[in-house]
Length: 354
Image (cartoon, rainbow, N blue to C red):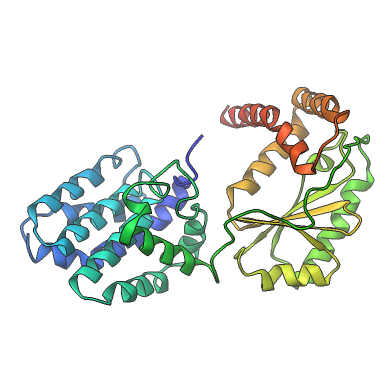
């Protein structure tokens, strides 16, 4: 499975152009010392070509190391950082997180060249982000929270570069996201009971979909019925799960406050995710940012179970086997199904490739 720091091919192309802009802003610092060395400029050009679709990923994976080596021919720290910024821009073809690396190195180069310029550089970077690129960058995990790529450890995650990336990530949203799980009300012991598929579940989803649209005062927000109650013929616990894609998960005043005013109750607040539910606990509304991979995962499982009778039966058997146990919290029950769910989703992806 790809690292969440990779981003999709489409999203990498979106952010590659911005990364190239960031690197090119400080390229003069390198060229002032090595005017005949074209490696950083070539890396930036290739990042732009990748962004436009002229180059593919496979051919670009090693290109960033060419620009990085150019840092060895200059002496000033600012010029070295400028070369590394170009290298990171080229590296976006390999992993989307390198877009933040390109911006962080550019801000570092600017600051090394002139005290106070780094903050101004980050402000310029945020101001010149397109809305689609901003949305794509929001999909990257917060610095230090995921070990599967450069944002988890190493040069990008510490020191000045880490501070720069943290400032950029904070600037992508209205405010920093939470960093830990808040389970409002604490654990809730529960005994899971499965009910046969109920034709009222889709109708309940439609009722709450309209309730959510009315609360948010929009008709364009993406809302989907997910979970077992969204699969015809599948036994389920009688809780309708809904997922809503919001623009900025940290802007709770835009979506959480209206939903609470509409009668929902906050249950979960955690990085990238909020969950509200009805006071009766029979409808759960999960909120993620637009483009969040979690939404795609929910829909992948739902659509596969709707079409594959064997995996639908397997999933129901698994739930029934867990039925007789007592659970300290509903989240523990969900975790117990993880292995089977991962196997089903793997088959779903394989079916889509055929």
